[in-house]
Length: 207
Length: 281
Image (cartoon, rainbow over all chains, first blue to last red; front, top):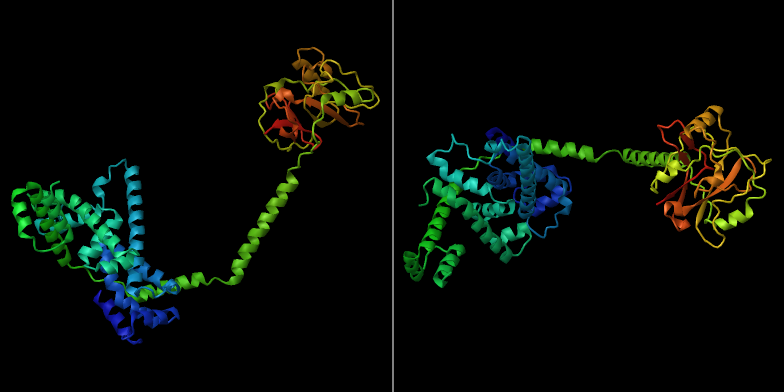
């Protein structure tokens, strides 16, 4: 891991790092590989953080990150610079997360149907009973409840409550008004708390 | 829900940190609001714990993404001749298929609007050639046949026989099935290709009819095939469409004739474009 990062940092010297995202995007659109690399290095980890919060699987999160950048660089000509590059990138990431979540759900349903619902215990979102010690029970309860939410609610909880993004930024990412985002976040929290409450009671965090 | 409870709920949803004293006083008395407040504080603790959980660093090197980009670019930049070749091949294949289809299936011969049967009766009988009895054009299969629009492919190589047209013989007068001249019953015409009936088939036909002589065409009940004044080998027959519950000639399509069943030994298929069967559609 460290070696890959070190190599990336070593080779990412061919472009002026003071350039803004939009300037780099313009260069990348013209086929400048160094500009693409700089954009990748800037946003690899922030995108990975959000995606990992959503998937909780490093390999899957890395796959999604790769797809995000492939898609972004292939469609740079559609980036209109009306929003920030990071916002545009995050929108692609969320869309890909939604697609993956749908695929995962469909695959799981198919497996369960094939096994006549005997595979319910092997649901990847279910907490591992061995690892479910008191120490991380809190986190596990949180993510278990989070994974029970529909994808659009889950993304809002991640963006607003975990990543602590501003409402304005979330509104830009989702292409909605700030008011609409506030309302959606409120609904997402309500749904989330309804899922979280019994889990917190089960681990003794609530009376 | 009482007003203070609603205010507590609003306060919780707003995410504000310090609760006003009035609401705190209400919270001490209301069990429902206490539960909501406890859930909120637990939620905040869970959030805090999850935020502090370290997220692993992304181990995906730029070289991998770059290689994928290059691979995709190669795929995208397929030579232009390949695209044209594909489109051209597709067009040629479609052309060949349509040509094969057009040449394989003969278009049904339109005989024009059906005329009233009375007209045919008036013009046909005197000079129409008369032939041997219609041993195989018995109405049995036709009566049981639903008027479903089934196109029968004329794949049989050799059409076999129905009747023999002999121009030298005078046509017998058609009497029994002739409608009254005033009735405008719609009919359809069909042209039958006449071929001699092989002796073996003639014998089978006779046996099938119980040894009785073949039914003459004018005694076939309502299915009266009328011989038109055509020279050999063609004859024209008219068929009352009311048999098939058709009262309008525009509901009629002409298709190759097939009668008998595959299981019967008297199966005949007139795969000739001069032959026709009447179907509704």
